[in-house]
Length: 137
Ligand SMILES: [Ca+2]
Image (cartoon, rainbow, N blue to C red):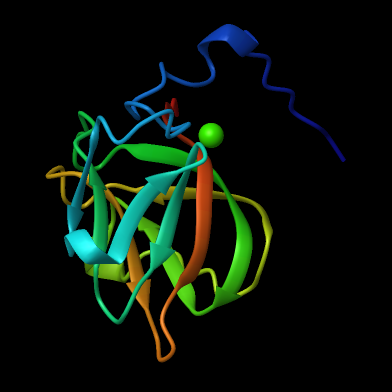
């Protein structure tokens, strides 16, 4: 039995923050496909969504690289939300309620990072503290 150790400097484990205004201090940095579906209020992204709408952040991404997304859901009422840079595989659905969520995903479309609302009823809740960083292999 043998063990291998991999030692890396923590400072280099992740790349720099790629999300502009992940704390929703205002609406800058975000584009809403479905302007009536999203609002920025009280320092959060408030979603009163129906099926299939996106909140987009034009992060600089590269296809084939792995990214870690972290975000918080609060005030959850209904539905699912999916953060994604991997649209071919359908993203990472979060159907459950309030909490902090972390996913690693391999980018297959470098157009943008987005949250996609889904379901019936679709996502109604708030999002805050969004982070997206490259994970170095
Ligand atoms: Ca905030």
